Image 1 (cartoon, helix red, strand yellow):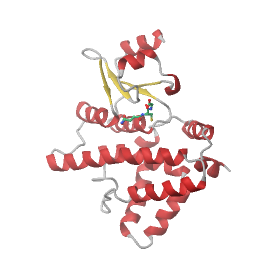
Image 2 (cartoon, helix red, strand yellow; image 1 turned 60 degrees about the horizontal axis):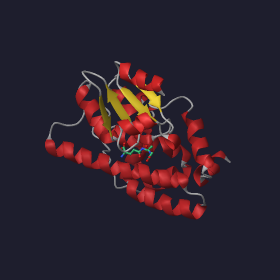
Image 3 (cartoon, rainbow, N blue to C red; image 1 turned 90 degrees about the vertical axis):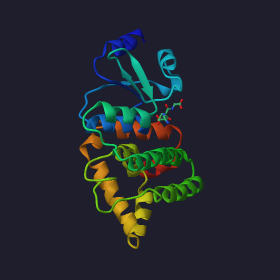
Length: 237
Ligand SMILES: N[C@@H](CCC(=O)N[C@@H](CS)C(=O)NCC(=O)O)C(=O)O
């Protein structure tokens, strides 16, 4: 334990305190990748949180970003961490225009509820619960504004909103019934078609692919299998 505290203290690079399958951690990993900022990732066990982490981060949630220079500062909450990364490293991605900036922040905030709803969906144990949550998830997802003229949220480069929502899109791989429903809807609705393109563009982006470890799929499936996830049992069957 002291070794980790020491490792964190002596790091010249930002440290992203993580849990391997956490979507909120993934948001920050994506942005660090976009910014080509090197960083260290330290995983903690969320089922048995280390005391040093509980002393460091009042919520006890991951991610946290530790910056040692000039003196140690700890930032928590993925959306706030990402605004810091955006301002501190490379060219800022959030728009300068106050209204556009606030609009993007609103949707970033909204995307947290999508992450939570998707987590509930993976935690559902039976088809009834799963179907009910699927409907809710699709209806919430369809509220997100999609720009059919651009590859990503606001242009052909990734934005903070892209980093915020990408973890939801990458996990759709384990929810084929949702993608099927969206594809069906897309036959008569252009904006759903644009949403599907956005999903593909984002999950194929290098910064998103590199935001999780090579064994992510294995870790993700075993995490939810333990809780007898209907979704994971169905795709793995
Ligand atoms: N609003 C937070 C949510 C972070 C969050 O819920 N992280 C989960 C893991 S994915 C966590 O740390 N759970 C442990 C706990 O709630 O105690 C953020 O955006 O950073």
